Structures are given as structure tokens and as C-alpha cells.
Image (cartoon, rainbow, N blue to C red; front, side):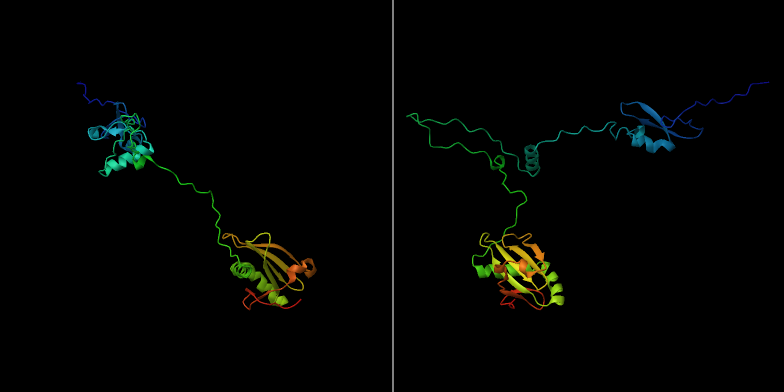
Length: 245
């Protein structure tokens, strides 16, 4: 009986997952960095491309290795390259020549040329976290008026207005400090409560500070009870004669 002839089939495996390529299934050849050839099944094409393998059919169009990055240039080199890209090549600068001497061995009057402006770069000095400062009036009355305006623009009049609804209109005192010309002291008082504030006219960031508060008018110095201001109906402080104690 004659022997039946059957075609032989070479066993081919995927170089990524190791799976045997089935008959009729396509295996695509890829090139790995270094030029070695690998077979990849359809299921592992994405993994091969992620590893940087290149399809053999596209080898003529794509490089097999990543391009080498150029070293990072310094600031001066980047500025030169930018000028050259704009059509303005960087002028060559040479060191100044030696001084020329006349017949009497004296230096000539002609000064050596200075380097181009691009090479003379200076950084302006700036204070770290500068403090905003506003102008301070010199007249005492103007200081008081300005301090009351600053105080009225803060959050403290809301507190005063809330207390006044229960205790009535307060007595108000405002005067500049002799030891600190830029500061004005303000006292707002009732029979059962008082607050003392300080307004710094030279500070534009946080000018109003509450120093202390109490419940007895005797705790306040007598000079701070010379009431010279009052509260308006909307809770703002204004220069004027207040009620007597």
C-alpha cells in the first residue's frame, strides 16, 4: 500500500507571547534595536510597537533607534540661535585692542570699544516681598479724617453697628500718636463696653488693628475719653463732637 504524502509545517512561534502560530495565521516580521529580526503575531503587534520594534516592511522609512538628543545650550547660545533664526546673525565681538601711544608715549584719546549691549546684562535689584506703603498726611486733623476713612473701609464698623443697636450710639475718640506719626488711635465706647483700635496710615495692606476691649470705662485712660468724633446712622465714624460722658 503506497505511503500517503502529507505536507510538512514548520512550527513558528511569536517572539512576544511565545504562542505557536496556527496554520493560516499571519506572523509579521519586526526589527528590534540592534537589527535583529523577530516574528510577531497579530495579537502582539501593539506590544511590539510599544517596545520600539519596527515593522520590517517600514524599515526604510523609520529609524531603528531613537535620535540622539542634542545637548542643551546655555542662555547665551539660545539667544544667538534665536537671532540667527530671525535673520539677524549674532555679530562677532573681539576684545578691545591695546592702547595706541603717540610720539610722547602717552595713551591716545580714542577709547576702546565697548562690548555689544547683549553682553552687558544687569539684573535690577528688587526687594523681596515689598511692603505697600501709602503717603501719610502731616496735618493732625487730616490724619484723623484719613484714619476714619480707612477704618470705615474695614470690617470693624459692622461690629460697632451691631452693638449700637443694643446699647445706643457710642462715644468716639480719634487722635494721632505723638511717638508714631503714621498711626492714629481710635476708641469706641459705651457705658458697658469699649474697643480700642490703631490705624497705620503708612500700611496699605492691613492698616486697622484692634488692640484691646473691655467692659468698664474706667479702664480707659482719661486722655482717651476726650470724645471728638461720632457714629453716623449707617455705622460709619466721622469727625464731630460726641456726647459727653
